[in-house]
Length: 582
Ligand code: C2E
Ligand code: MG
Ligand code: MG
Image 1 (cartoon, rainbow, N blue to C red):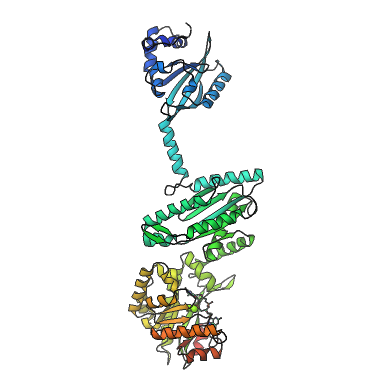
Image 2 (spheres, helix red, strand yellow):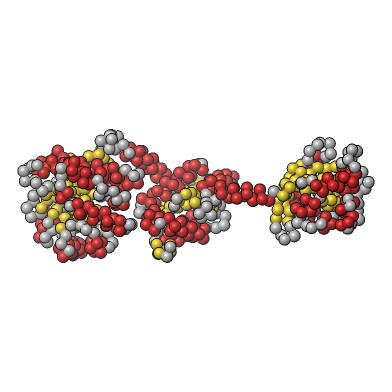
């Protein structure tokens, strides 16, 4: 029986007129001809017969998949009325190439465009049947749109950050890998940017996670605004973002983007109704100039970012080779710093604090020294910030306070030293974890030093983050009887207002003012202003960095009570220091 070429009406269809071809395909003798039609109707999968791109038959499931009501709606219509052409072309070619001799069919996926313009994906298997009139294609099809959607959703989940919608670390790595390969092939350069927010933790801690999330979302929008479509901005996790700038033309392009990003980050954010200021630090490394591989590129951008951060934040740095050696050394030092207490490599040096009138030693500032077995002496200016970063500062501070208190208790037993005190520098991050007050009663009890034998030196930065909590902790210390001094006074911004808020009994004039106080008239005015301010607020003043007799006299004449500096003694280990106690 030949192919029916005339359009049929519904009645004819349902009476099986279109099943002619099917009957030809299934020419089994044991099934009655009329039953083929019923079998096709009941097949739980879509069946489509077509020849030269024209639909010859669709079973009810297929009609349904096509979004039609009746079989006649698609009969003798071109496939391309319903499907995207490319996928069909591929399938037909593959089927024709295979010919008729093999069993099975060619699997494929075709995109169906329904009359409402919605797309669906069909999973198909197509085989060719050679009939007298020519070859016929037989396709079974299943609508897998739902599964596809789920797959897409899972793929999206795996590749994109939930909070910001930006590509996540996984997709970022994938894209970077691709850009590096492309750059190698096309001799392009790719810039990689590491962007780290400077005050994210503070926002999260003080304004809550909702504000933190809002900040990250807003930051990601602003970052995207700074970049081209071909660039990739990704969130690596936490407050770390990255940007890939492919096809980077030579010249200051990356620099321009970095400046723009920084500008966007310092513009105020409104989070949960509150205005918040943050900033960012950016490290940039360029492939292939700065790195031979993707891993190296990542590492070097990170190193450069780190440098930008330690150089005072809100800035960007391009990677340079010397950063590498430095980072290496730093990493080793950081590793060693973890063991500094158990290996007993920390030593306290004591520097006398003298009464400028009587020149009597009243107490001592405790200044830490790290005696590294290989590198020798390491300055606190280097390892204290490092200890803050790796979370060692709490342990180190506690050790310092405990050791200093024990030492002071011992020295207090000497004649004339009953009121001797030690001052210990308190790191700002140490204050922020706020446990410093909790251990103090135990330390005083164990060492036998009364609380008034200890001074803690703080800096005004202590108020720059969570001021209320810091003040609470400081007041707790003061109530215990501990004295607080404000260190490095005069180097900050908001000195007067800060001074009024902090429960400090003394202020230390920063050592950078003292040597020049005599020669520079402006500094003279400033130092005099600090002294009169302290007097009016009833605060003690300690002059730091006194190296010459004239400086001591200058301060003393303006009723600065205490002084400290090389003139009296450099910071020395306990066994040397004790000699000045007489
Ligand atoms: P700081 O608290 O301002 O300490 C005073 C610094 O001035 C010390 O430097 C001291 O050696 C130096 N100095 C003293 N007299 C003179 C002088 O006459 N002329 C000059 N030019 N300098 C003088 P050092 O020991 O290098 O300490 C540097 C900083 O490291 C300290 O500044 C302090 O902020 C920090 N630091 C030291 N020990 C500790 C500690 O145990 N904990 C914390 N958090 N910071 C510490
Ligand atoms: Mg100090
Ligand atoms: Mg100081």
